[in-house]
Image: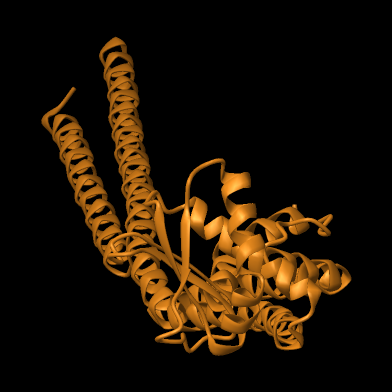
Length: 218
Length: 107
């Protein structure tokens, strides 16, 4: 009776052990699979991050090239816009200069008192820029008559205003092909000052007009 | 405890070992599959160069249009300013050329 009882107890104990073995194995299996799943998720997540990094890198490279290509395609258009703007502005300036030139020619061709005063002023300015005592004045045929007609008073005014000894000579042997004004030089032609109307108009364009426009637009 | 009972314990242990081995193989399969998927993800990275080119071109075109509008506005202001003081500018040039200095120009 006692032996039977012992055998029964041993069998139950063995069953418990077997169940424990099974349970431990199941637990281990679950742990292995869960760990593998975690590892797999990590691998995929890292791959996604790497893919995103590569995509950004690739896109940046392609974008840089695309930008360069687009810039090249649009560079001409940009230049054309700039050129058209400058041409339009130049057109406005040209009209103003043309208007000024027309009025200047009217005054010069009229040969009246206003132009006589202008001629004197141009001669004085030119002579003041020549250091030589003997000064030659060259001009066109029309102005030659005007200058010789007022030569004496002109020479006196020049001496008085420049406060130095000056000998003026008006060269009538070769007339300038210009709208008016004078070209003044020393006898040898080493020093000269161009005060023809054309030269002054050019100076107005180069020196005066930019200053006027700048202050106008400031 | 008889021999038969010990044998069932041994069987249970073998079965447990077998299941664990199987779980390890399954784990390896899961990880290998993840690696394959990862490889595909990384290799599948592409961008659409055509779309990017169009996008960049559109962006720069729009900048250029803004530049053109700016230039047109600058020209309009220039013409307006010059137009308003045209007579004074012309007179200043005439005075300058005829040796009268810049008098008469108040710009």
